[in-house]
Image (cartoon, rainbow, N blue to C red; front, top):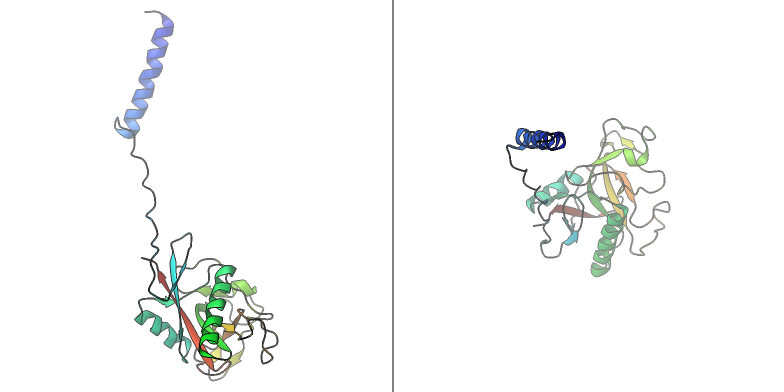
Amino acid sequence: MNFPILLLLSILGITVAHDDYYSGGRRPPPARPPPASGTRCPEGWQLWKRKQGNWCVGLFVGNMNQPSAEQQCRNRGATLTGLQTDEERRRLAAMGLRMIQKHGYSVAAIWLGARRKGSCPKANMCLPKETFFWTDKHTTGTAGFGWSAGQPDGVSSYQLGTQSCAHQFVFPSGTTNPRWPGIMHGQLDDQYCQEANINPSLKFYACGKRAT
């Protein structure tokens, strides 16, 4: 047998040995594709498509504080929702506007699943989009924090503490309201978590859960 053939067999032997060593003589199976995300939501809820899995959002009326709104969501197998993108922020504002127009309500605010970071207790200690975090364990990033100008300002009260929750203003006009000249329809504002019926007096809450 001439030298070139011996060299070729040697190379093939090394290759086979290499495969045998790392895979037991068999190639590893192909990776499984990620499971398909669900597309079903309860009746009256919206389906929001997200990279991390589809998300269902329902909007409800309830003059209550933020912790009570969270409990109402949990009673529905959900949690107060965060906003993944600015588009989601606008979609929720549109849901709120339709609810206002349907029932003839005036100004409302929607409780969200967001809390102030402990490292950002006062205004200007952190950038606006870095001051709060989402609590629903599904929403990521900060793109959905569409604050109104000068917010979150972290106002403090002796009785209620610091404004550590967040809500979204909804105006019947779909644009502005003379009572809150610095806030546009759909923008976010920080608020006392225990506040239930003022600034504004009408409260909604937005629940979210995974699609099935």
